[in-house]
Length: 131
Image (cartoon, rainbow, N blue to C red):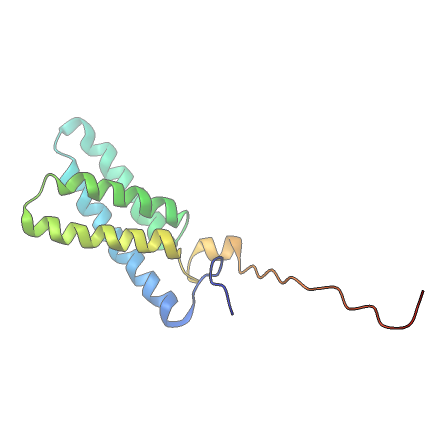
């Protein structure tokens, strides 16, 4: 059985993860607009959102950025209406999918870490009548 723990999916699954990362990059900008209610924090949040969106699109430190974005969305759920809360709950689910699955093959994380396959081989049995 193949284990997919440290693999970066390619093909249709990799393209789907790329699209998910791009969509969540747009969410990062929306979150910055929603959370920047005070003028003092608006510039910081705009820069943080731009950095998060860039890291999500190129796929660098994707799991950490998706986790932080998911936490930001959880904070924003309390500030929105019922319909927006349902939509934001879906975004949290997408962020957690990225955290669990990873960035996919079309990312810098995959280029940095590559595909690692560890194969355990048992030693060959003793053949022969040696003493």
